[in-house]
Image 1 (cartoon, rainbow over the protein chains, first blue to last red):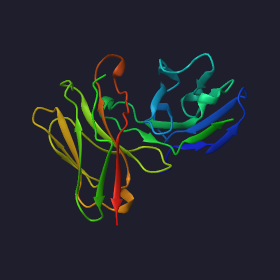
Image 2: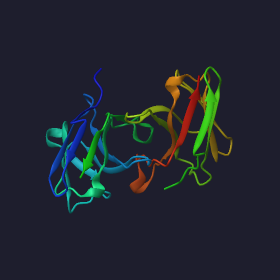
Image 3: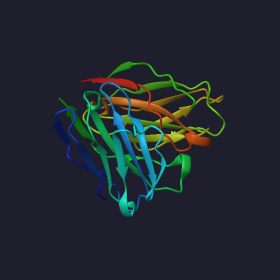
Image 4: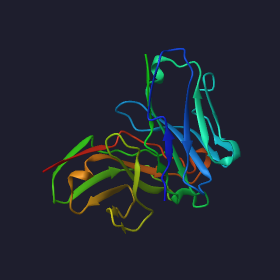
Length: 116
Length: 113
């Protein structure tokens, strides 16, 4: 079974430029998560989707970050414009909804973003 | 959100057991205890979870204190591939924290050959 796929794996951009990250979750997983992980810290949730609906986006900086999950499968996270402080690893995870607080999240390898 | 406290780092020798502690004194009765680990340059991976009873799987064992205010992840025979950051996380059942993984700093496990 294929795991969570993310692309690109690495991205280097200059500040004020836009950037987008793509995630393909495990087949059949209805719940999709985007996390941001700063160096030396644990991941922090940015947004959680149940199918196409964003059910928790309270931690998403909405002035420059946006996300979408069309058709309830793939998802894209965008930053426009990027700032130096956005340099981090962006992780996508998915889970099979219905298990609630027992559900296991499966993470992708992440996209490492460097903003110069 | 209920918080967890873990040591910043631990060391072990290969082939020896490792006991990774976690304190969660403010745990609520419906919080599940989850453990994830993150190998270098990879995303976190699920290790084990439990509610009240001790749990075993092919990766590890989870020992939960009777009062549930602490737990211990047990790696029975550490290998070099077990070197990672280990996160102890409470997964809540109520309100906005429902199903939300809140990662702390975790414990950096170093395994010596």
